Every structure is written in structure tokens, then in C-alpha cells.
Image (cartoon, rainbow, N blue to C red; front, side, top):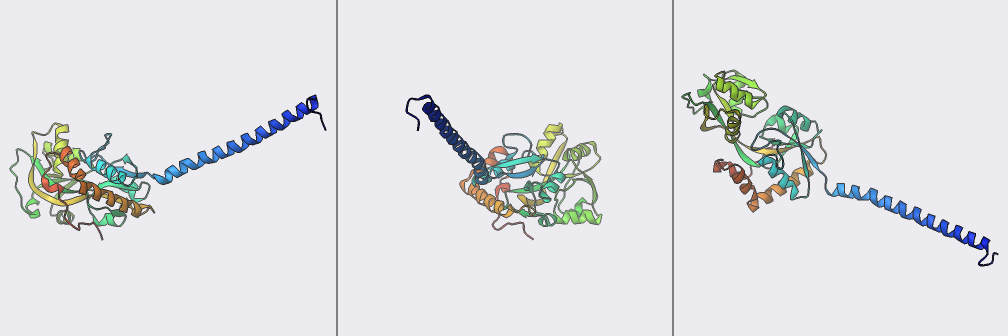
Length: 288
């Protein structure tokens, strides 16, 4: 027993205090590290990011922040309704489809309904109506009513686009002369140069591209649609969470449509778009 106030007593007391402080420090540090490790996991679980491929098709889709085109903005807002953030990767359209098909990305924005895509993707509810019109040189006297009327023309097409079942069957049968490339811009240049006679393209996209290319005065389009469809978000069947994402997106899209926000986005972004593009018929689904 050491007497209080003796040198040995003081050294023992200091040693005990140091041991106590060391124990408290170790305990608090371990607890703080456990909390730090747990918090990011909880945040990730609460807000998973869906990764979608995208492409250059302005004004609908484009690699220009902050919205990346009006369709991309609609997709982002629909998922935001369900607290799901979105990230986009921009690729040539064929690669965008393939990356999503293999499940390397969760899905892709935005595609028309095609049987060959249904094997690999879940399709959302339709986002907006979509038409292709036939572009031609302004110097060319052109009119048409039926696909058979197009058999005497050279028609430029872009790889992986959907031009409608009747037209594509005619191309496959060889009754329509088709020149396929991977670029819409290339097709417009060929049209202006007289290397092709017609090029089917969505009117709002086409007019924007012609303005960028300086060809607005040389090329116009026929108002009769070659093909009418809808644009959809597609989600890869290789991704386990795709059906849950699809349900959440459709719910968010429905809320945007019901509130009038979807119509507002389209009419302000595309003021020259015909009103029929905003109409989505009841029970229109892309299913097998």
C-alpha cells in the first residue's frame, strides 16, 4: 500500500489514468469507424443509381448538360419521382443497344417497339408519340400515298432504326432500293448531293440537323408519315432489378403526365412539334 502523496502513489495513479484514457480512445475510435462504414452503405441502398445508355438525336436526346435532351429530361424526372438518380452514357446507337442488351448498362433511352428488341428488353409505358417523314430535296417534285409508290426511288436508311413493318418488309424483299449507313448526318449530305432521293427521319430531329449542316434551304419533307410509333425506355432483361426499375419509372411517368408537366416539357422544348405527338392512346404497350 502506497501512501497518498508519495512519489510511487502518484506514478501509479498517472499510469491508471493513462490506461483508462487509452481504453476510452480505442472504444470511441472503433465506434466512429463502424458508423462511417455503415453510413455510405445506407445511402447507396436508399438511392441506387440507374445507368442508361443514350445517343445523339437532338432535340430528344443529346450529350449536352444539364438535361441531355427533352426525352432524357423526362426520364430523369420520372425516376426522380421515386428517388432514383440517373446517369447517362453516350454512344453510337448500335453500341448503346448492345451495351444495354448485355446488361453492362441497365437500359437505354429511347427506342421504338421492335420484335427483336423484346427478346432482350422490358419496354416502359410510351413516353411520347413518334413519326418518321420522308425528306427530299426542295427541287424534287415528290408525292406518295403507299409504300409501293416508293419503289422507284433510292432511299437512305440509318442502321438499327425502325421504319415500320411494311416498309422494312419491302426493303428485305428488294422491291425498295435502300442505302444503309450508320449516320443520319451522312444520309442528309448524300440527299443534298443527289446520291439518294429520300431519307426517312423524325421531323423535329431532321430539321434541327439540317440547320446544323447548313442544308435547311435545300431539303424539306413530305407531311405524310412513313411510320408512326412511340418512344420507350428499354431496360435490360440481364439486370435483376430491371422489372423493379420499370415499375418505378412507369409510376413516375404517369405522375408527370397527370400533372401536365410532361406536356409542358415537350411543348416548351419543341414548340413546332404537331399536337398529335403528345397524344398517347390508351393501353398502348410494347409486348410480345
